Length: 177
Length: 239
Image (tube, rainbow over all chains, first blue to last red; front, side):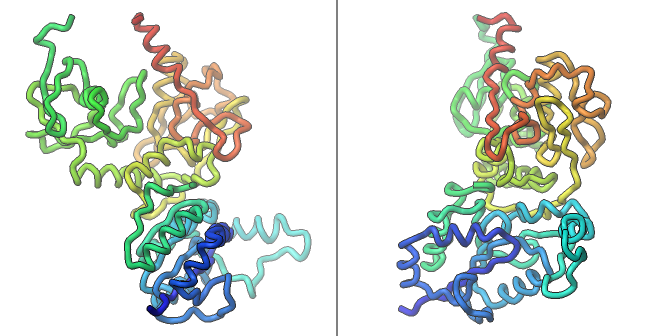
């Protein structure tokens, strides 16, 4: 049986969901038998490949780069999974949303900067007006709430999807879990 | 003893049940182990029928009725769990999540929150409506307590417990519709309130992390509301 293509993406989040993914420990070896990790912060691949079966998205859509990435990823993914509260609800990255972007920039790059205060105009992608849940931007197939979702929840979600089942997660996890 | 004329017989979810005339559909459902979700309702306080989570279908009525304030009537046929009701309840919970800024992961009440638990109970994995992300105030002027309006769902339990049990009526609701907020006194800072007795009853009945004790960090706020049915019972002179 040919292995499925699995990818993980890190948008505006703390990487805690990826840490929880790694917490699957020895079960990762079993997963590698079922799926090839074709794109992820955990592997060295710069281009998101086509025809990916399952993509786990950590983080809210907060910057122009996030928006560009998630649209391309959606187009190249069969089953897109919102992994964790940041991608499902905007969570902590969304706490800036009641403030205008200029106030966020001022706090981060002027008021609290000691060296060369000023908003960077290269390398750092521009912020969107709001950090948004992924499903407000592109269609999402499966939602895995939790901050972070536990390794058990991620394992259940990924194994179900690789076997072509829809995972039943609402009893296992919740917002803020 | 209750006279026979005061006993009503009705059906809930196809079960034949009997009730006293002063009982609500919610009372009867609870006595018989039928689960109806609630939020603004709290035993020991009056029910405003405001949150609409306990809506039920009553045969012959084209309106959905709140179980917490609808009295039993002879021959009533009540449905508590139709597909339509389940859908509406989930929508109500989703709207509660989008109206203010509920960030469970960094909330004092994480793991002990009635809204969070209700979300899980109705099988919520995400919200279909766009989040509003309003700018809301945090009032930390009181010596012992904090009011974080980001986490308030306007259930008005604080307003009712302060008025009906403590007798201070420090809390009330200001504004209309989406602009509604709970306020202390005439929209003064809580710490400046002349009427507040600092009893903390409002904090203990608050279902979310909107009202909390100072010094509590994430997931450290456990509400203690055992006092409420006890106080009510003693005041009504029951044994």
